[in-house]
Length: 223
Ligand SMILES: [Zn+2]
View 1 (spheres, rainbow, N blue to C red):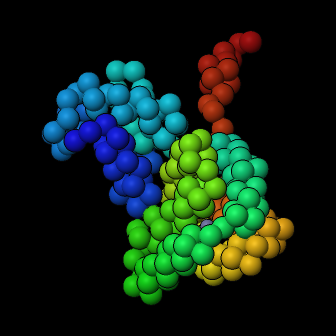
View 2: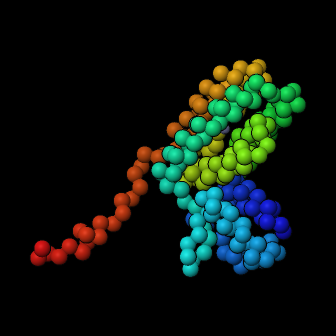
């Protein structure tokens, strides 16, 4: 299996929650399963580590990342800076063929919801945002959106409140309606609201456990 395919399969597996945060990616298992050399597997893992989707721990190996609350907040700040601008541009230049692609995608999302297929719902929700990036630009933006989407899936898995599995119902369809109508200001605002809804559906307020206070633990009674 080629490097790119291994990389993409891992990204999809994260988006479908087949690889949970903290899962160990043992090199020997990956070489067995993919038929790729150890060197290739290492290249893919270091690429994923560079994107913060994988954490490499010396002497222990590679693990699917567990983004912190701080990283989760920063990720949504980044998405809010990028994605309203994306739909603004797309609403100005969308073609009828692109509208059909987006509508087909939204219909697939609806089918997955009807079938209650959670893995598919989450993956398709993320892919909607990647489709928009692909339509706006061909080089940097799609790559950045793929990275941000994989990280978002890890964050949703870690900080999800029960029963809020993906992008809120109907909002993608509303966005497509506005983009098709060339309503760039409306689409921009709708995307901003949409990203806020996703972020607010997460439980990012529960404080992370404080680091141990070693000074207190080892404080000598006679001091
Ligand atoms: Zn969405």
